[in-house]
Length: 239
Image (tube, one colour):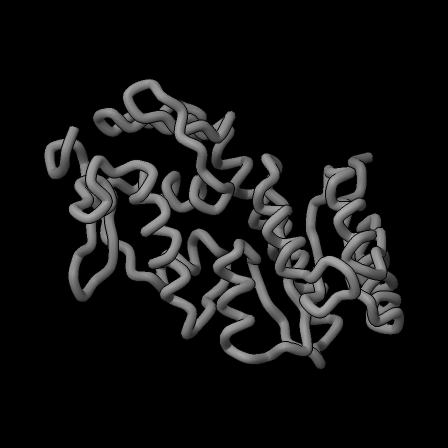
């Protein structure tokens, strides 16, 4: 029998945490609860989590810092932020730091469990796709190897965050095709975060800083005005 998926809950409200733990365990997940930010960091660093349910307002280390640390790790862990901070700025900041989803309190526990399940399915599907399409993709100087999740330019490795890699790899699987920001949110982030399309802009700008010869005049990830973005095939951009 497969080992159960491991979910870390970092939440200082004991009642909410217990409800989440019970419902997630009923779904067959192995659940660990950390009651403050310091405990959350310790558990996170022990690694091998399949999903992270993260409150923003925590004693000690706050949720945004934990999100930053999670995204600095090699292993990609789906993150759902839960918080009473329902303002736009915190939703946007959480998503730009790499969270996969955001639910404002009060929320439906059943909805959160459904979103955890959907994120885990999507993560597994992306891993399967990478194994099936395990060949290296080359675009002039740019090379993308999906299994080890490595990117190089002229043979020199480029350090990407997990989300930056996912975005670039998605473009690379559909060279020359134009995607709107909402398309990319759906396909790469996994949810249609209406109103947060500029999260895509932020990640594309970061990618351009890393893979373009001149980020101010990009030749690889191109803007198609009024429509979206595409990865140029070699003859369209710089080699």
